Length: 37
Image (tube, rainbow, N blue to C red; front, side, top):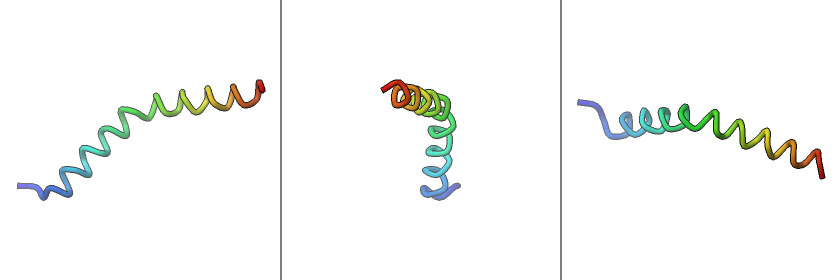
């Protein structure tokens, strides 16, 4: 039986890895927008 904190950490890690591509794409879009302005 795992501790709740360990379980929560693993869940957060999975969510982070799943959203990394989206965050990277969003950051690149913001950089492009800033350079255009």
